[in-house]
Every structure is written in structure tokens, then in C-alpha cells.
Image (cartoon, rainbow, N blue to C red; front, side, top):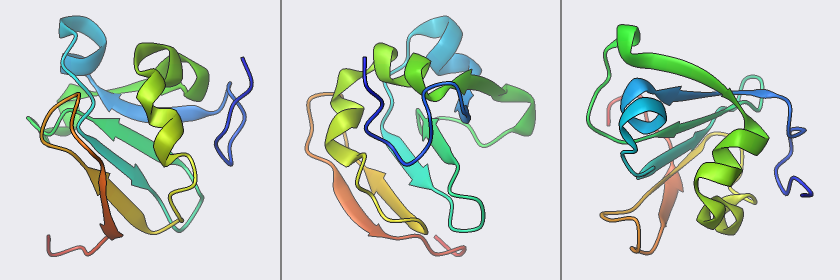
Length: 96
């Protein structure tokens, strides 16, 4: 499967234990401006102990709808309310 992101399928991405081990849906995606890495999050925790690392290809296999935000610019974040929901995109702000 071709990786549509600006990172190869074997590049590391951040996610959470809830996504990986409990099957929580990915509801937040962040494309970091500094190194172009990605985070695919459930939105239920920001505890660093809950963080996990997966490959970009693994994240895409967990949720094929991530393809629709592969063009998210660095420094932006996308959110949705449910797994079926539409992604809302905006520049990422540290305050919120």
C-alpha cells in the first residue's frame, strides 16, 4: 500500500495505548512543523505514559480514512467528533 503522507510508511508516528490496545478511534491528527512527524490520537489522554509509537503504515492500516488528511500542512491539526465524522482542519496553536 502506497503511503500518501510526507513520511514513508516505516516512519514513526505517535499514538496512544488506547488506540493501539483498546481500539479507540483516531479523532485527532497533528502534523508537526519542526520535523514533519505525525501524531494520531484518540483525544482521551495527554499523559505521556499513554504514548505509543507506530509506523505510519500501521496507522493507515488501523484507519484508512487518514488518507483524507494526508495533505494536512505541517503545523496543522485535524479533529473530528466520531470515526465517521468529517475532519476539521486548522493551524495548531499551543494554547489550544
